[in-house]
Amino acid sequence: MCGACGTGRTAPPWEDVLAGAGPAQRAARAAAAGRLLTGRRLRVTPWRGGYLLATPTGRAHPVGSLGELWAAARPAAPAPEGRRWARAPVPAGWDPQAATVWLAAAARAGAVTAAELPGGLVEFAPDGTARAASAPDRARVGVRGPDPAAALAALLTFAAGPEDDAPPAPP
Image (cartoon, rainbow, N blue to C red; front, side, top):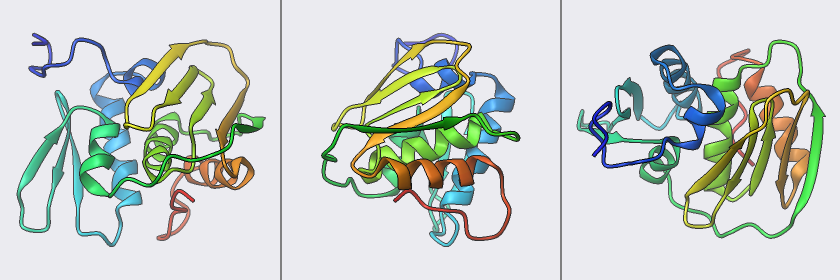
């Protein structure tokens, strides 16, 4: 058991490795997850061991990572086919917390199998687990999946911040 967070995990989730593990980062990811869950009557709040997912009845379900959050919030899609990449320079106003939330949801939806971020690389397994490797000083962002251009466009739009009430859902 982890003495710091009280969870049973021994390794930090990929989002903590690539986007930071502090309370401010977790709160920003919870807010971004709430943007993606608009209209689903689910609420996400930060928790010291991850996140709390509240149902419409008020029941709070603790989850330790974004992968667990999306597993609890939406059904799994079939494993995506394709190994093509789409990449772009990191745009001004890039929000790494929103990007990590969007990527976890897109992996759950079957739209991406891997991502390249300014902090490193993450690969998503069909079972919902993810593996991250730090690689700082990247000046671009990329996604791998069946339709990487569409996924990258949606990611860049979502990670630019809340512009309206209808954020782009993962493809």
